[in-house]
Amino acid sequence: MDLKMSSNYQNVTDKKLQEKPFVRKYGSWDIAYHEAGYIEDDSSYYMIILTQINKMPYKEEFMNESAKKKLELHKAINEKTVTQKK
View 1 (tube, rainbow, N blue to C red):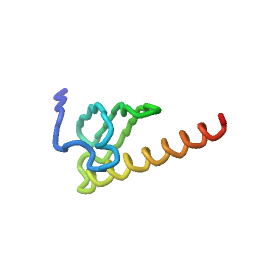
View 2: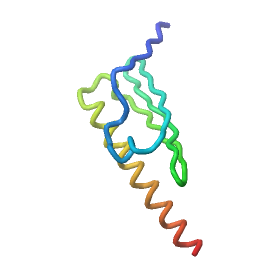
View 3: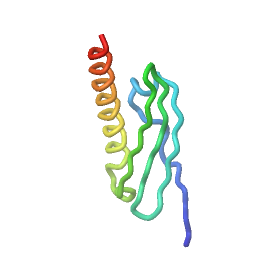
């Protein structure tokens, strides 16, 4: 089995995400493309995106949009939790 790790993309292009310290690991094989990361924030979190879109032309856009939506979801959940604690 020939496992090839690719590094085609730079960090996620979402400016909001780039402002926060994070680590990222990504890789691909055949149709699979996966990213995992840890974002340091007031309420730090993990971001894991598993796909089968490695050979699709919209891969980078999909990953960036997914990261943005995950960030929005994290903020909404975190704000709700903070509000409930008050």
